[in-house]
Amino acid sequence: MCGIMGYIGCKEAAKIILDGLAKHEYRGYDSAGIAVIKGGEIQEIRTTGRVSVLAEKVAKANFTGELGIGHTRWATHGGVSERNAHPHISSDNRVVLVHNGIIENAREIRTDLEARGIAFHTETDTESAVQYLGYVYDGDPKGAIVKLTKRIRGAFALVIMFYDRPNEIWTARKGSPLVVGHAKGEGFCASDPTALLEYTRDVWFMDDDEIARITREGCEFYDFSGAPHEKKPMHLDWDAAMTNRGEYPHFMLKEIHEQPDVVAHTLLGRIAGEKVDLSHELAWTPEETEKWKKIHFVACGTSHYATAAAARIMETLGNFEIRTEVASEYRYRNIPIDEETLAIFVSQSGETADTLHAARLAKNRGARCLVITNVRGSTIHREVGEAIITPAGPEIGVAATKTFTAQITALTLLGMYLAKLRGELSPASERRLISALMDIPGKLATILSKEREIEALARDFADARGFFFIGRGLAYPPALEGALKLKEISYLHAEAYPAGEMKHGPIALLDKELPVVALVPKNGLWEKTVSNIEESMARRSPIIAIATESDEEIRHYTSHIIFTPETEPELYPFVAVIPLQLFAYYIARQRGCDIDMPRNLAKSVTVE
View 1: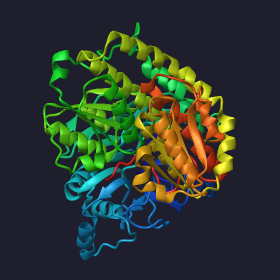
View 2: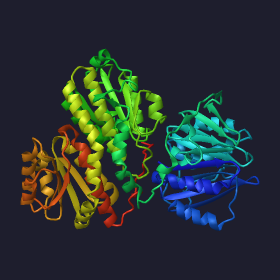
View 3: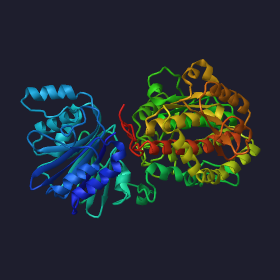
View 4: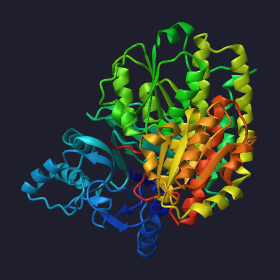
């Protein structure tokens, strides 16, 4: 969950590395550091706090060099301190490295090296790797790294410099993401490809058990035994402008506003003539789909809530036996998985550790596996192979917004296509839903035009002690996501429940200081949800209703209403989520929270 940046070339390394670390800060922001090699010496600067603090220290120092590595940290082993910040240098000052991941046998290695007289200076697991490298290094970087990869256990992305090798940077990857790039006499490496878009769009996503040597001339790749192999680069279709905030005060608000375009781009090329067609992405036949008796959706966090919405949508389209599972639980339960299972794994980054391990489990048990991800060439995409890529572009805000909408768009299309192949989707239903999906971007733009109303409502409730979200049927998954968004960025307690479960415990929480956000679309469950609203009113809880535009009756129950456009019942999650995202955003803004980089969170959870 940390961010890594490395550079070698003819320019000042510090500036490029600091710019890259700033783009990685959503991955970790409790401390940061940078190291360069100049004149056969390793120079480093480390600090607690943000990358901007590091930049100030670098600006005051005589810190120059044409190759260097940097790191922005999300602490796992060892507290937040300058001593524990990366990069770490071996006691003999010959090796320096940065690390993302967890070295599971760090204590064992440390004990062994300390017995050999090597002094340790930090509380981190990472130091065991750099001290071991310093111990075994005999002038052969590749040989030392091969020995290291055989010695350490766990997940790691390592970027390494050796004091007597001023023309190369080395990397090693197992379990934690790392991408390498090259252009015009310059080499780069990073945790996230977005940090490289300004310099190159041709990159190599490193595989597990792979080592790379980066020089000004190019990149070479080896396996963990040291044997070389060829590797083709991948061209990224993202634009560097996507990683800038533009006129928006926060990336999160920018990404909320990008959602109409994201839906339109996700539909592009997948529907034509009022028909859904994914045949250019999925080589599925009707005969194959008939064999799949079970569908497993597996994901974490916001992606899990996207699958919860997708499951309910899919249930309306065909005769599916569906289960939605949190990836970290799926791995450890005795769930029947076999060749009759279609397992669908959803991950924004494609690097989520639990989702990746769950996919490996399902694949090994014979399931047909499919990935929904926003990053082409990510680890889960490479390992599973069959994928639907969501064209949301890079999402910088830690709290996911536009990728949720992209995921439910892709998953809705997938559900329709699967039902169609199985002969369970009528042509009339297909036309109806395609027409409604084509209207969604315009409806989302209409909701965004009400931003000032939502901001005013958020100001009125920013001092609440917590929030309770309720919904039924297709309104329940957006309620879950709305509560998560509020928790993530405002630090307020927020809880979501199926509205029908209120009397089974949650109703005990209600009082005048706990507002209830009720998702109450005008559908067959409207009266049931209104009865839950009345129960909440009887306990003096203020009511905030997310209601359908044609619903005038809702005014009898509350004056705090956000109206959403009408759409087909199956597509309600599309119109429900943006009001909740904006409500969370403006509450957090009113409370003075760090919206793009909320405390304790990182964008991609790449360790268990």
